[in-house]
Length: 320
Image (cartoon, rainbow, N blue to C red; front, side):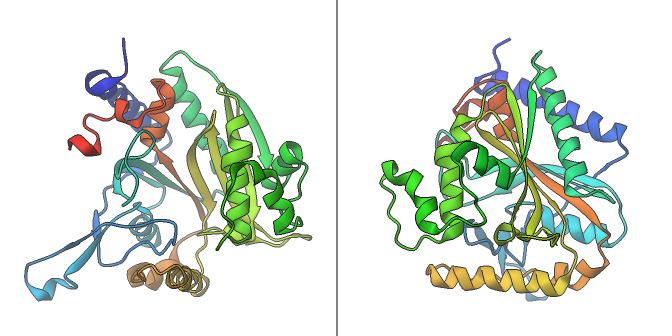
């Protein structure tokens, strides 16, 4: 059966959803549903949100509401309330690019496992992707690497110790304007321009233990040498599918990170985003856990296979 276009793509999506729900049912992970609209937004300076206005009674709270970029914050509030292992499969929204690789409205699978760290969750994420490949009669090899070893193996660079000039040198051929770029920008560009394109199509690549400067919502581990973020990313071929963390549950540190994000937004001339005070109020009660978000359309593109996201959507943004 052809799995591209609105009909075939919908059938493949339905099969994947059944697999996901069976996968988590077998592991006693509860499916939940959380709000799409919030009074708070995502402070990440690399993500832009959609907003809308509520026109009802003022007692309902702020009129401006933010469409979620992920279900992360309400899921963590549920964890703090004691719900235990849980997942959500639902729509999220990110303002910006629309075309062959991106759609402003897409589907995200996000789940949390109490008592796991990022390495255990990395294995479970790999098992889910492997099960999805089996829908198409495919298997993949698995490559695991720390972030540091990946840079050594692919570029002969130490991402923790190399100067910015040394990081920029392998990118010279791309003619990148260095204005405003900082160390983490060069590291990201090395991943996207030099390392990621080399990943084999039949391989799941798992990268873990990132520089502490790329911690986002992950815990930081100090075990000698350079501090690392307890974070992983999963690639299938050259496609980044999932991003996971050994989750931070320190509200003071989390507030500081949100405020640093807003400071970066100011520096870039972007609007500051209201912090999720509901999350910060209960984050200290969240149990030790690991969480991961996986892009469903990216996975469907790998399964179809296609390099055009529009072929796994019923209707793309331009036709919606």
